[in-house]
Structure formats: structure tokens, C-alpha cells
Amino acid sequence: MTQDRCAFCDGILGVTSRETIEHFRPKAGFPELAFAWPNLFPACDFCQAQKQRNGDWDEGLLPPDEAGYRFSRFFYCDPDTGEINPNPAASEADQKRAKVTTRLFGLNTKKRRKSRRREWRRYRRAKGAVQIDDLDCRFFVEALVA
Ligand SMILES: [Zn+2]
Image (cartoon, rainbow, N blue to C red; front, side, top):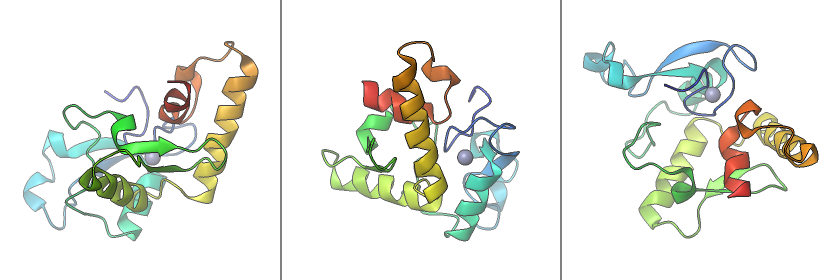
């Protein structure tokens, strides 16, 4: 389903991080969903730890399989900083969802911003010799070349 990627940060599981199973709606608040497939996503241990540390749940959190989801609808990528930010052209509600998702999963930590800048440089320097599917955080480069 996620092509061996973390469903939240798109990191390559087992290479850049340990693979875990994330309960999108936390077990503590939603025990009835503890074993429900639609609530379970492959995730890296970093995303999972960040989510637990940053509050674990918010109704606005974006599920990775939301119908009609498009990254660019919610997010804007900054190639200079490596940050992902709410798309300024999105509705106020969508910007709020982007913000809470970024915060809970720690998507703009220093390590992640640095990694995205590195992958963007790597892609540009390769001039077609590196495929987007070979990169960590594919969505970031995809959004910048679109
Ligand atoms: Zn992750």
C-alpha cells in the first residue's frame, strides 16, 4: 500500500528508520479500533514517537488514505528551508489540518528539513539520473517539480 514507505513522512522503512504499525486513532481513546485495518498504517518509529509526544490525536489530523487527498491541496514546500507549510491558497480549514498534521508528526524537525533539502539537491544535480521513486520524501520533490 505504501511501497515500503512511512505513511506519514514517506521515509523508506527499514533504511532511514525502524518500521512500526501506527494506530492513527490512538488505542487509548479508540480501543474499539485497536485491531481495525482502516486504522492501522505502516509508519517509521520517528513519526510514531513524535505523534505520541505531541498530543497523539486531533480530529483535524489528515489520514494518509483520505479520499481525494492531494498533497498540494494542503501543503506548500519550501526548497530553501526544506519545510512543508500549509498551502496559503487552501481554505482556512485545510490550512488548519495541514498545520496540525505537520505539528503532530514532527514533519518540520531540523533533521527532516535537512533531509528534504539534501534530497532536492540530489535530484536536481542528477539531471534525470535519479528517479523520484528512489528518493526519501518523494512528495517534497514531486511538489517542487510539478
Ligand atoms: Zn515517518
